[in-house]
Amino acid sequence: MAQDTAHRAASLTARELASWLPPVGSPDADLIGELPTLVARSRDLVRNHGVAAGAIQTLVDNVVGGGLRLSALPDYKALGRDKDWADDWSRRTEALWRSWAETTECDAARSLTFAGLTAQVFRSGLVNGEALALPLWLPKRHTRFATTLQLVEPDRLATPANRLDDRRLRGGIETDAYGAPLAYWIRRTHPGDRLMGTTETGAQWQRIPVRTAFGRLRVIHVHDKERTGQSRGKPILSSIMPLFKMLDHYERSELQAAVVNAMIAAFIETPLDGEAISEMFGGSTEDYIAARNEWQVKLQGGAVIPVFPGDKVAPFTPSRPNAAYASFVENVLRHIGTGLNLPFELLMKDFSKTNYASARAALMEAWRFFTGRRLWLATYWARPVYELWLEEAINKGLIEAPGFYQNKALWTRCKWIGPGRGWIDPVKEAQASKLRMEIGLSTLEDECAAQGLDWEEVLEQRAREQDKLRELGLTLGEAPPPTADEDERDDEILEPRRR
Image (cartoon, rainbow, N blue to C red; front, side, top):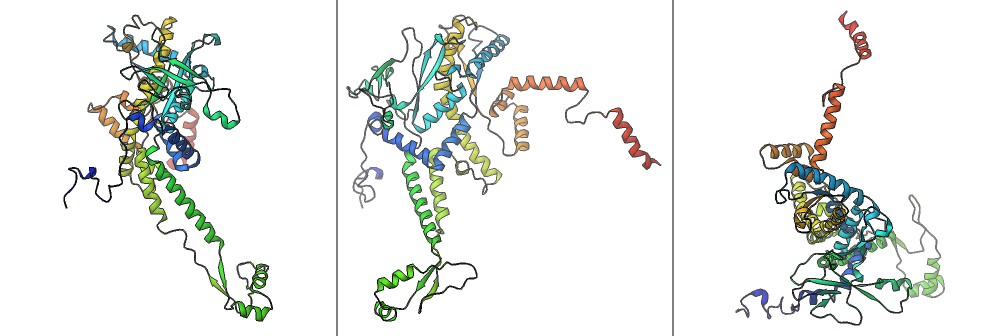
């Protein structure tokens, strides 16, 4: 049979494809109108489905963990400096950064440290598809740094009610002719506040330019662009929401059926018809049924069950749980894991059916995804915040950086260290790490970073420990030399043997 199209996937007559006619829309046309529904359903899943909640937490734990640690790496060669200068500059800068980032002074709400803000930004990026933050300048708080961050729920980013989306304003983002954002329209209150009974005389929006007149960033919009021209982000659960919902319905139905079946212990069968019941008991069938309902007999171990004349007890064999239940649920969860870029073992925290090789392969595949997400988060969230903070520190004279504004990219170059990858077999992987460094395929910096450690801190701590060992006359891995008292006790124990 001749095909109607060169590509069978484009056929309009094939039985399995004829009704498959999705629209061809622009990135924003396909997303912005449906975004509120996607976000609401995504939040509902994370609130009410254990697997969805666990998957989001697994991603947050592996990408952010306890936070991202700054490793300042100014391009000293391009700046005309040497490595010793760069190392000293980095240490002083990192120490100052920690004095700000490890306190709640960095949060406008004074509730989270930078690590907490980072975790919330990433979680919002997963569940809502995007995160929004406003860098503020609050000198009246009399803290060491005036730079603070205010996280904003993405729901408040929207086109004003008296305007329609057009070529330059979409989803609350105003852009120039090239698509670069110029300003963000942010609602002053959350639209969901009405569910609390909060009334408004009229919704108000504030237009916030992306940058100040002198170039300082005022809005940080973290979202993943899947298509060119896409203005907003979408939840990571979008493509697998139907699977989650159907799995939820199936599990509930199986659970309810199992509970109902478990409540039925046996059937009472009677050979009597309605006429026989009337003749025997004198009355209608309804009277007989009422009498049976009042017959209080419980099934108990070793009990003799009295029944009505002619009745017999028939055993009941429940058909639940369904024999195919476990394998079906597992297959659906594997599909869900693929959509989340999580192996089944990590999605369900179940390694009971996995050997070392397959577990390592699964975790390595997951680690590639975690590393990419961490780089994305560091690039579009952590580094812009670091640039804002560093600018203030330089202007206050706390850090020396001549020509900062002319060479901003050189001064703000950095790396962010996240949680460690961990080990499945510590001995094998430590030996492999040692071998990689010996043959020149890796460095101590890379190996430490893979475990969430700073190589300089590791070396400094090792140097302190070795100095202490030498001071005490110890060697790592050996027992301390015996004291005089211990020598005497040993002699007393060995003396009888010598005799």
